[in-house]
Each structure stands twice: as C-alpha cells, then as structure tokens.
Length: 102
Picture: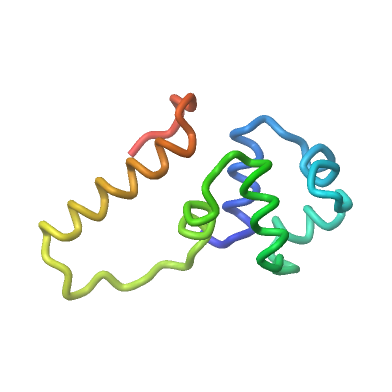
C-alpha cells in the first residue's frame, strides 16, 4: 500500500470527506486529493496533523502506507509474532471498526 492509499482508507473509515480533513489540517481539498493520489508527499508536520485528525498513531499510518518489504529470512515464529503485534496496533488505532478483518 502507498501512503496516499493509507490516508484515504483511514479517512474513509473515519467517515470524513476530503474537504473535512483538509479543513481540519488547514489545507485545501485539492491538497488532500494530491496526497491520496500520491502526487504529493506530506512533510512530517503534515503527517503528524493527518494522523492526529484521523485518530491513528503516526507510526501506524506510516506502517500501513509502507511499500511491501521482503520478509525472507524470518522464522515462522517471528512472522507470527510480528503479525500479532501489527494486528494489535491496528486494532488499537481503530477500536470501534468491526469491518477490519485479519
């Protein structure tokens, strides 16, 4: 997933429009559109604002927006532990969202 898709997904889960999110962070709707389409990359200050308004830890927003990485070399036990930790992080970020399935 890319960062723009992560922002869009989190915004939609929160039931926010692009205009509403833009207003809350002091940017234009067009700016949010550019972010969600990965035409622009937000700086750290904007990322912090986005995460705050989307009610998600910044680290989780960045994590779900990250490109795929190779997990070669990890044991099955390590991968299971990582999966459990990630699930807990995501569930804590979206505690009331029952549509999130793992």
